[in-house]
Image 1 (cartoon, rainbow, N blue to C red):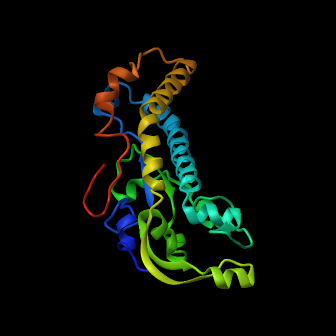
Image 2 (cartoon, rainbow, N blue to C red):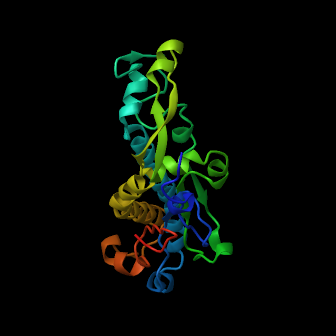
Length: 244
């Protein structure tokens, strides 16, 4: 199987130039206006942000897994059916998408960094991630090719398949297999819901703030949003240089 691109092309930079097959969900950093006006409120908001960022990472992972299952190919449909161009064989796989053994889907995970200060990130931020950890990619490099697309020279062998009852292949013409693009699918979902999730975290912090007896008004999220977020609340960087 020839590579369409280097496996580095699909792995996403997080804090340093080293490529990684994952996507970062950044929590917002507190603006100075909030810090000066209501220092105590920060603790309440940060507590709410941790759980919110975790939920966002989970939403991204769920959307990415959904995409893995939905990325069907003609061969995927054939192996589930157990028939290709009139030749029958033992069906295999868990779906017609990129789900043969299921490892690609099941190894797509989420994790959190709740103390990112050591990496030069604002102490007021949580980092939530979803994707394939480096150790997974190092052991199962095919995931990288399935994600970004690849060229295959495998061709269905009807004679050997009919004789064995098991799908067999032989060298054939090179053809391109489109990538799953699971990580971008998850990124789009996160970007769509991030602001409403962070607004919910703000409202939860305000509720607890008032329940604890504070009377100073911390303000409305819609008013503080332009000051409170440093750029987009979610950032996605491709190591080749494009930033989304």
